[in-house]
Image 1: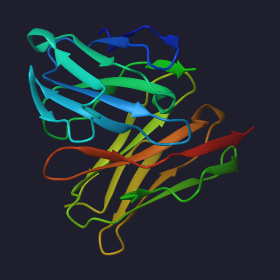
Image 2: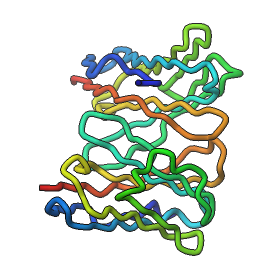
Image 3: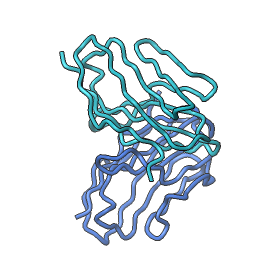
Length: 114
Length: 111
């Protein structure tokens, strides 16, 4: 079974530039999550999708971050414009349902904003 | 305001001994608890979970204990192996199915 795929693995951009991350969840997984993990911290949920609908985006900085889930499968997370404090690993995860079935994580995208 | 606290940033144990990782939470409404393991340059992987109706769940060398009155859970690894060296995150969930993670504990198992 293929795991959660994310790209790119690494990205370096200058502040005020824009960047996009892509995620392909495990086939058949209805729930998709984007997490931000700053160095030394635990993952923080940015947005949760159930199929192509948003379940929770309460911690997404909506003035600069946006996310969409295309046809309930792939998802993209965009930052525009980026700030220095956005430097982090962005993790995508998926799970079968919206309950407590454990989430499977991708390898993440390490973003450095300079 | 941290809802989930892992107060030990790191833990070092000898191979074959027990590793005990601790996690405290503040909200009594949380009712599902998970442990994830993370190797460098990889995403977290699910390890073991427990719901609030239980106080213990065991899976091979890994056991999670839940003390609801103290709002405390722990992960026991017996016996510890060098391959267990990783960062361990506890995560808690409530009625909205949203998971909140602790900061993690770096476990080092020395041969």
